[in-house]
Image (cartoon, rainbow, N blue to C red; front, side, top):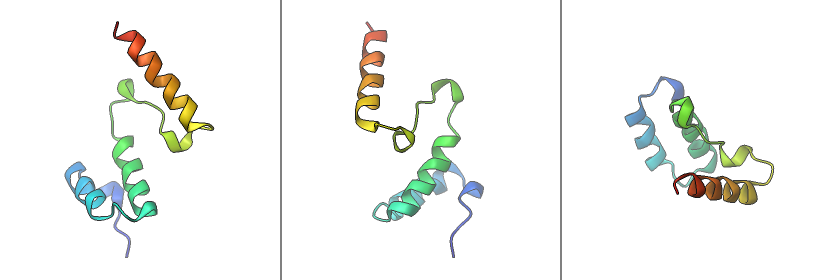
Length: 69
């Protein structure tokens, strides 16, 4: 039986992530729920949803580094 991840608290989700770190589907589902609860002003794109994750994440990191200077 799969738990209803959206009803879990953040602490419960983190425990679930820890317990299911080797189950890619369960981990990804729980991580998406946890990430969806973040403050929208600080939200970054989820790498799995990007067309070319490696180059797009690299570009985001470079942009972030240049903002801090």
